[in-house]
Length: 347
View 1 (tube, helix red, strand yellow):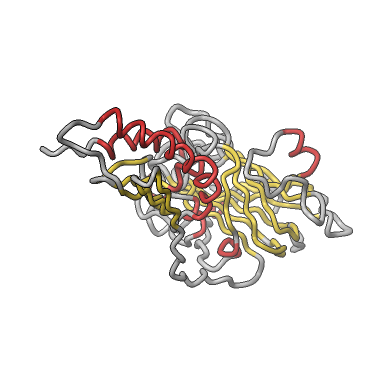
View 2 (cartoon, one colour):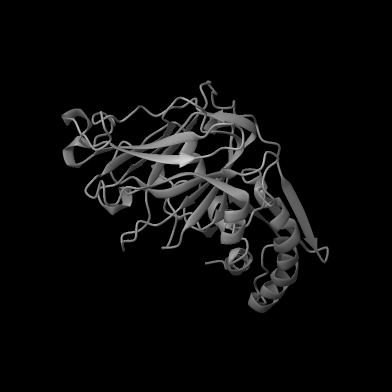
């Protein structure tokens, strides 16, 4: 069947051929982008009909660490771990089961599989009863066998680096082809059965759908390599706690057990800031009949919503938000919470 022929069974499936030469193969791979969709009452928690494939809980995504290089995770959504948990939403508007960026700027997600995988297919799933189901993104792999310069950086990849060191797998934009779709699955695959790529890294550059309602609700992204990769058995984390003693009077505990990626920022930026500011705030807000807390904990929680709050004399911060804002308001927001720590006035 020609690509421009559409049978009743495939009425909501679009195929796009993308010619991509790969460094690992002497011949070029022809990548096909397939889009399946449900709309209105067809979009249910069962995710069936119109060619939608079942989500995989044992794909190679279980091997990957996922880092946000550009953009910021929306504090009302789930962390990036939702993209590989093998669980799709059971409701059409369920922020806690979806990852999505905040604001209206593009985002970048870097997948690091630890070692090269033989990538066969990529599938992404989204569901929202509006334009927030639209999927608009591009996939890249490093051009060089040993990885691109700066590929493991924690900062955004600029346009020049993207052009010089990364190779496009393919791109998709469902806004025109599936304007009214509520539930969308996108699949990248090779037309002739060849590998899409043999790669350790995959970069996903996500574009906002371009409406005032917000960014796309991504429910799951599967990376298939023809093998089964069960989720890793959760081990009991080793406590990661740093203590700060100030002037032999105040003791602050920094607990980042659930978010170990914050360790460098805590040690290099947050600890010095607290050492300066907590004594100052305590001095300014103390009174004759009241002395501020001399010992408390600042804890970062992996899947917490919001930014931060103080409960009693302890501070709790969202691991997702802080990882996305280390170069912005992260340190200042904790200093703000120190004020609430001090404000434990009786009565």
